[in-house]
Amino acid sequence: QVQLVESGGALVQAGGSLRLSCAPSDRTFSRHAMGWFRRAPGKIREFVASLTWSTGTISYGDSVLGRFTISRDNAKNTVYLQMNNLKPEDTAVYYCAAIGALGSRWSYWGQGTQVTVSS
Image (cartoon, rainbow, N blue to C red; front, side):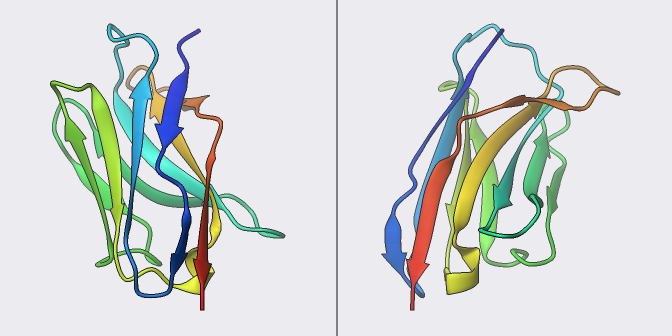
């Protein structure tokens, strides 16, 4: 099964920026959508952003709207999450995910990358 490979997590000060990257291990992987989720300690998993591959339609979670931007590079087969004006409450493990086919669920997941924002 295809794997999603993430990178870019780090420790950053409040107000700083980070960019996460995610690419499938199989370049021929056909996907309906890719997105990002996060899980903070003691909290449930939270939707961050998604991008529908065929239409480019983008959605964001309310807590990141206006600060985070999801984008893709088709040539590199990669999806990015640009995170600006980071806050301590953004501290979490961030997961890349993919929907393989229209109508299916978020069934492909990366291993997660830690983002820590210090105050």
